[in-house]
Image (cartoon, rainbow over all chains, first blue to last red):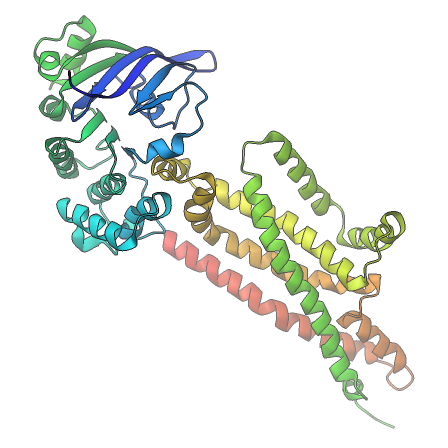
Length: 245
Length: 228
């Protein structure tokens, strides 16, 4: 029996009367990659944001590591140190250098030793080929470089779990590859990941598990290979056809 | 006997008395600005929290100090506090108190405006790395909004300095009050003393405020150039 890192059971969320997530159940095994697919507005981003408390939910529960999270949960702060999140719009802090962006969490949240944290940050920067950029400001970087820095910033907390919310969606096409390669490399290093993406080829390569969302429901959950070669539901079939070109 | 009116400034200790008055005005302004800015940052930050009661109270406070003329505030505090609350404060203390509360009110609006102009994504990025609320303000929100707040804060500073000219109304020995005393005491020999004394005070205020206004303009231009 492989270890579970995250279990979501019967999670419901609505904005006012409008339901956005309906009876979500999912499990994420340690060292696995789960890809969330689905048309825009299907609730993928909302779901991923529920998992580190950027959105609340009305019923159901989330079990992460040894913590049970119910609606109205307030103590996200310690949990977030175990969950790295990367956003579509990078959201680096423009007033801090690359290195200061990366070190903010390790030094101020985790109160780690500055020397040790800096060493780790430089090592991570080397792994994403940006070691020379430690002391520049985000505005001097390209979108792809910013996004790789944002990944490093999340990794610097030594998280158990990484969330990627459409991280290549606002990049120029030629920048996408570099970011996806970093994510692939992470998967090979056995990082547990949950990825929202529209890059189908990448999804097929990286996914151990695919969850297909539509209108706030998980319509199909299958292993990576099965989903792309033999989708069970008609909706998933249509979706895959619409994405193929 | 023909003499130049400008000499009124140099009769006896007039010159040092005027500078002494300016010192009092500047001292009150500086203390009120420093205390008011610190208090205003706290109030401004509190006004961005989602606590409706707190927001309402601070909003009322701001509107009170913005709507009521400063003279009225000075009179209120100077005459009503001692009588109805049995607090005997000196005129200078009352002046500092009123100006501090006024600066804090105006500053809270500047700070709030700056803070809410930081994109919400920045807050989420900060939350995602585990920052607590205080750390979010200190490391993410304030540093990014301070640039936006500086020009308005400098303008507020020069308004405060100018408004110290009202302090004679509650008998603070400020530069205007001393100027009037000098004009009255020398009215026999210097018929147009008012011209020279007020002219001199004009120059003093100008020297205090004009650099501030230049500085604010410089920062605003720099900001525009950086964002271009």
